[in-house]
Length: 161
Image (cartoon, rainbow, N blue to C red; front, side, top):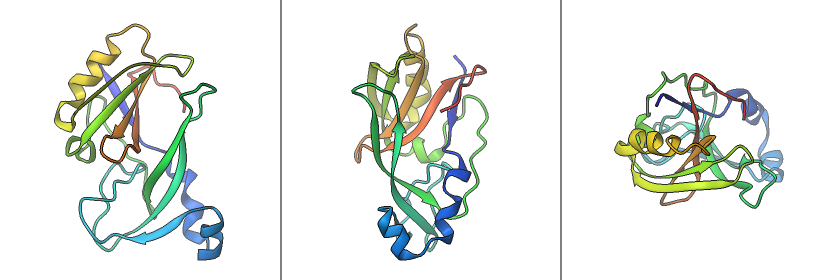
């Protein structure tokens, strides 16, 4: 089963760099300087931010489905990050190095299956979950913190968020 791990679009976050602290606070966004590596996984570049880089910590609605599974959580976005362009079937190190929760959803946005595994095994887990005919897409979450990491679609039939 071929799949595509999809980053969040960079243009959704570009304006954050131009905002002052008061406006960021009003939007519940925190500007942070990275002080450890790994530890600040960017959902746009799909890489851990490097020491000294600026990241934004914000709440993001990653599952806007009109179901009880609608969800948002805190995410990090590197300042000025470009969206990752991963080849089909590639799992980035940011995911491979963590414990990951995989959540499979149907076309209505209802949870139909889930699993937790070491990141090194995520590609196989994605294949298993896409083996179920009702799985339309998968969300990856960092299992310890519970926050959204990335969306996975079947390839080459990709859909928009």
